[in-house]
Length: 132
Image (cartoon, one colour):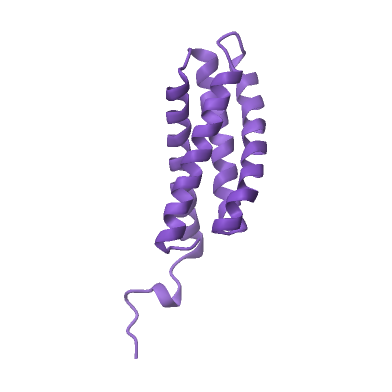
């Protein structure tokens, strides 16, 4: 993942917006009459489908491969969380969008942490290596 400010802010914005959109959509679809497990599964799939479509649009600006994984994870997580929450208790559209946005933020930060742990320190980013 790119560490330049444009891409970092773009990833944060893209994931929070996708999370908020899917959260608001989940609140519109699910009511308290739904089974919590069914709501989780349906909104997980729907969230991933919508996130996949949106990742194609966002990927044109920020890079397809760098956007797809965090946005798809955001769609899955926000759909699951807001879908289950809406099945347990009534939510307002604002609350659902806020919960979805938080899920998006947590998802992208989690992907960054795992990416850095897997990738490790590269030659050009090592602060302890003397140059020259």
